[in-house]
Length: 190
Ligand SMILES: [Zn+2]
Image 1 (cartoon, rainbow, N blue to C red):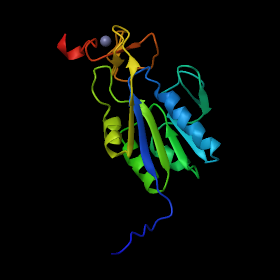
Image 2: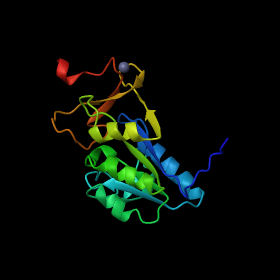
Image 3: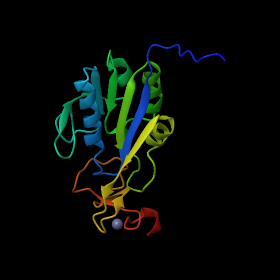
Image 4: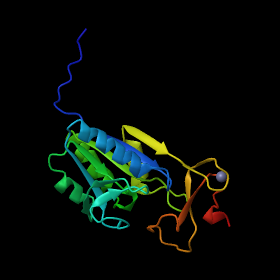
């Protein structure tokens, strides 16, 4: 019997951390990036220019944990700026263009570990297309949950509590609240 001989130098892969608003996605991304840094791995973290809530060039979670990041306009700039990073973090991935899955595939093929954090669904509970694709092609998917503010069950949805039809809307506690499937008010059913 012929033994397996794995002929490659580096192996990359894709990890997706997704969930509703307030589920701790960015905290989880930062935790994974920090562990890689402790292991002396070269890391780089990117975020879309659309996300300007907090510090310009930092990824900051709602509890204000932060890590330096590179702000880019288009996902193709991640390829250009990845440099020699072994671990590449991408925050607020739902704000990126639909080219992001291809970009992540290419990085993984080049032997990089790619960690993506983002909302899986918009305020109408419709999947963000690039996140759905990334969840399918990723080696590892972690789905996080917030806690439903109405009943205390695990929350899978982000209820928009301000009047706006924009699909991409920046906001924190004043624009969204986490709700479970039962308590979520489905926009198309009212
Ligand atoms: Zn509920």
